Image (cartoon, rainbow, N blue to C red; front, side, top):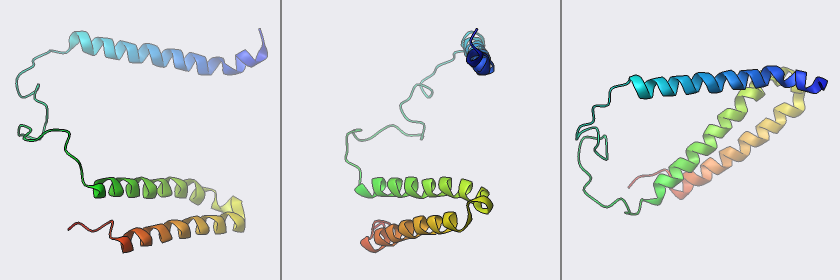
Length: 121
């Protein structure tokens, strides 16, 4: 056999074991768990009351703006963790490149704040 196949054999075994274990867990929960549906479990919403409007109503654009801002700043944190871990080895160039990145995000945040995207009237 080709030696490259032996390099990837542990990964293939791991994937195979993961598929077998997940299939066994899903199958056992399907056969063992009790199915006791009632009106509360089959209701559309879990918030405690029946829906009173159509699901096709338009949402305020601010919901989407807040979601986009959350994603932007969540990604910022996702970039900050690896940067903080490797800060000792990336040197001054890595430090200043992250400062430029944070500066651009801060300018974007200030712009959103001045435009009033974060205010709820």
